[in-house]
Length: 451
Ligand SMILES: *Cc1c(COP(=O)(O)O)cnc(C)c1O
Image (cartoon, rainbow, N blue to C red; front, side):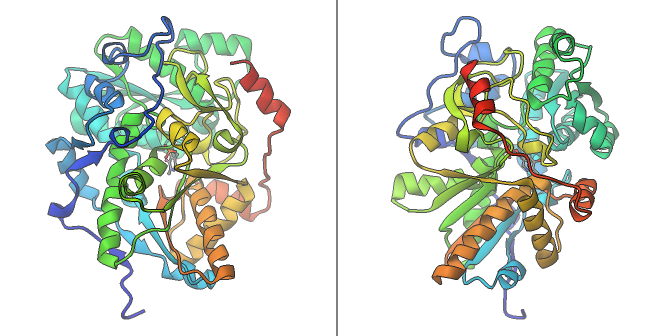
């Protein structure tokens, strides 16, 4: 080990001061999002009734390649960034692969995941624009924790709708949000019209990101001084997350490497986009041939088995209609432990990139993801988030293919978060009480044909 450098960091002045906007470089721009009422292409004015004006501008910006990170956000980034780029010698050895495996460790952020990278700018813009309150949804709770903290940093009141099943199963994340001063409500709830409608129709609804988004959106548009913030799916969230890949690019240069394969787990696409887009720009602009692999759960396979169509981002249909790969906005995903991956749609930018063949997707079963996560934990000393385990499983598969072929590929994946709040899930896996969830073609067809 003595001569091997394991971790790569950037100095403060080397941390990128701009995000990368892939929309500027895309040959085929994403098709427009549509206003849910008029069915006209969405405008900044319309979108900013929901989210901050600056986030709305970024969402629809298809021309500026680089977007400045505001100084107060950069200042907060500097408290935990750069995050380490780690050469996974331990995992390489455990696999006996000739591949060189690197991971970008986003679990070192104060809230334990990459989500803070977007929570900070979103809260900052809301404050700048004179808001007093912010509201959002959260699944497993990582996004809710990130936004609760970012709200505290910039002086906003934060209300979070948490998917009911996670609220009950992951009480510690709820406590963390409350520790940062947020108000947390399980969704579906009786506090909104959307929640009441859902509960009247399905009294035992366990909640989904779709129901929680409906409730948060309703609260935002009916409360003066309150804006909504989304933790994934939207283009501006992916934009903010490009700090991950931009740092990784510089850190890999220090290591003298460039990735052949870049992998991220995929819920709504933000950590995947964050690590992938800065490298994808060299495929689009400089003829590089890197492969980009999104790892999604077998139980929620919108990329590998969903349909490309216009669909809503939430269960009730309050959000703009988005052209994306989807399982249908009323799809009720199985209760897997990777709560952050239980979302029905893929977001417009990634969906266009898949259509254009610029990236690919694989699906990973729940048991396989935990098996990979435990192998990683033993080899690298970090217990990964159940979501991140999907990226690890895909990276292991790539590394094992290299072992067969003898290729010395460079594999980079995003460790989107740690799993220290998910130990009950690991407990269940270790004691053998976890299973897999597959979904039939008929079930997918039933949901997407309703669109
Ligand atoms: C939310 C979350 C995800 C999934 O969301 P993306 O937007 O697809 O990145 C993955 N990993 C962790 C740790 C998360 O918190």
